[in-house]
Amino acid sequence: MYKSLLTMSDLSNKDIINILHDAKQFSSSRKDWHLSKSYLVANLFFEPSTRTHYSFVSAEYGLNCKVVDFNANASSLKKGESLYDTIKTFAMLGYQAMVIRHPEDEYFTQLQNIDVPIINAGDGCGNHPSQCLLDLYTIYENFNTFEDLNVVIVGDVSHSRVARSNDEALTRLGAKVKFAGPKEWMYDKQRHMDLDEAIAWADVVMLLRIQHERHEAEMMQNKMGYLEAFGLTQERYANLKEHAIVMHPAPVNRGVEIDDCLVEASKSRIFKQMENGVYVRKAMLKYVFQEEF
Ligand code: CP
Image (cartoon, rainbow, N blue to C red):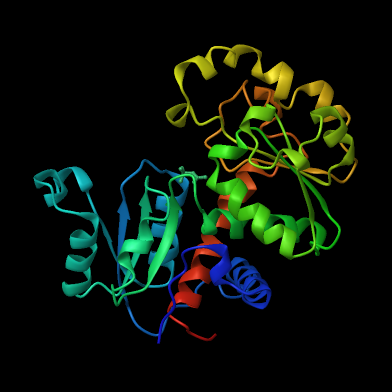
C-alpha cells in the first residue's frame, strides 16, 4: 500500500507529528537509513524550483531511490501532450512515485485515476505541503509545541501556497495565525494586523516572497518602498521578542521582504529551513511508501 500526499488535509495531526518525529530521526540517528526497496521515483517540475526540487533529489538519493528528473522542455508536452497523459505514461513505464510541481491550482484533481503515489511539490497558489512540513519542523525544533504560538505571515498572502498550507496546519495544531502586509494581498482581512503590532506580538514571523510572476506590473511599481512599509527592517528586527524566530520559504528578494543584512541574523532560520527540508522530504517519502523504521 502507498499514500499520495497532495495537501495538508491529507494528514491528520498525528500523521504530521509522526512525520516531524521521523524527520528528527533523519537529522540525527538515522542519517543512513534506507527504504526497503530502491524505488524508481520521477521528479516532474513544470515550474522553476531550486530548494524543493533538489532537496527531494537529495532525500531520494539518501533513501536509496533510483531518481529521474523530467525535462518538460525536451518532452512530448512540446507536441501538445496533456498533463494527465504525461503522468499516466510515467505510471505505465514503471515509475513507483512522482514528485510534481505545476502552476495550475489543484492540478492533481485530474490525476485521481493514476495508480502511483504523487507528492505535491507545489500547485499554483494552492498548496505546498512539503514546505509547510519543513516550516512546522523548524517551528517545532525551536518551541517544542505549536499550542498557543503566535504566528504572523507577512506579505503576499493571497498568492501564496505556503501561506495557505501553513495557515491550515498551524491553526489546527493550536497556533494563532495572523497576517500582515498590504491589505489587498490578504485572503482573510479579519485576521490582518498592523505589521509593527504583529512584530511585537509574534513568536514566529513568517515572511513571504513577493511573487513577481503572479502580480500585475502596476502592483510592482512600489516595490522599492516595500521594505520600509511591509518588510523586516533592522528597526523592526530590534522590536522582535527575545525568543522570536524569522522564517522565509525563499527564494528571498533581499532588500525587499527583508533587509539584506538580516537574512543570516541570529533569529533568522531561513537557511536552516532549507537544511530541514531534506529531513522532512525523507520523512514524506517514508510516509508515502508506508515504510517503518
Ligand atoms: N520554497 C520553495 O518552494 O523554493 P523553490 O521554488 O526554490 O523550490
